[in-house]
Length: 70
Image: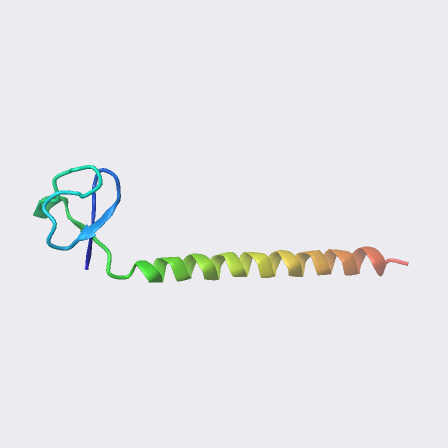
């Protein structure tokens, strides 16, 4: 488990009491953990891939309509 600093966002060891980057207090009421950080990154990748696919599909449809009008 990783503890993220509430001040600078740096990840710290789960037993850290202070942030190793900025020295902020990482007491229990300030702890933000994220065990599934990779999941959000994969969701961003999937959304970006879908946007690219939809943009390509739209370009192909527009090209077909423009060149097929004759």
